[in-house]
Image (cartoon, rainbow, N blue to C red; front, side, top):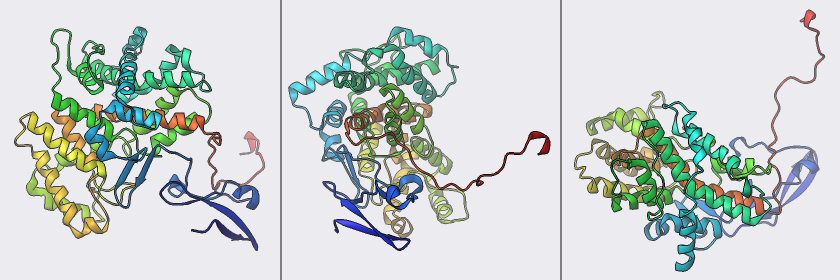
Length: 428
């Protein structure tokens, strides 16, 4: 690859350096482009723009690769628990036994919420969406934990990071409890991260909840699969909010709001709705035909991905997890799973899907797992936010420590009226 790229504009030539990362495509450094040419680049959706330098997550969508700090997602999901992956994302290396024990202790002992936060929940309607509650409660944490808001202080950043990772399961589980009219269940220090979340979701004061190890392992794996995914919409939102110097609680609340969008965090709910609409494996051919018809509004959900042009590496793990959960729960005949398996087989063999690279993605099976575990549809995106918090925090910390970081300020292609004379109200 050339060391520079030359741009010719208005009979002048401009040279811009080409930068290379440790892997992946090279990038053209156009930071001086506007100053030298008087022009901006135009890239709606930032699909061809590198917004930052990062050492956290790498995706090669053409071959279906997802690495966290160099480790393949499959290896992490198979061999680590969520706390180990969270440590890896935050600190750059997998912990040894002693370090892992200290980290898990620190996370566990930050999992309680300030007692006055109860009042925030009671201010919401009972039918409020859990994501609305999470946006409000997470944003409000800065009013309770203002002893760690100096983003220039590494100790403050670490404490805030641990608090967010630790408290998010409590916040999410309490949002569910509130919607059910049930008392809040406090976290327990003798339970692991995923176990604690399931316990707070399903235990009641009058009846304890024995956490099924197969289900807690499945939940742990799901959290790992969603922990980080490079510069997606919500992560970019966290970075953009953080570039202004906003506190980490506000930045993560902004990320939750971005994730709430159906094109981002609501995809697994859309898959479940689609499987219910199909309803019977005998109707699959009919709906595949509808999906191929460009004039038909029906779309197969859970296939294809903005980044992956190959099989989403997380989808295979999710499919295996789905079967494990259904077997453990004794679900022998699951119509939705039968439809999903048949659809996946078609997608991997049908020329239409292969040509358009419409492979199953991570959302394809997760909704079936959540439904089988008794988690309502309204909590699907909240679970996504719970998992992604650790990635958001890692990305936020990296941005704050970046000496080249500047406040985000995208440009625009203006198409409105040019300057015109003001007309007094009586003359309009």
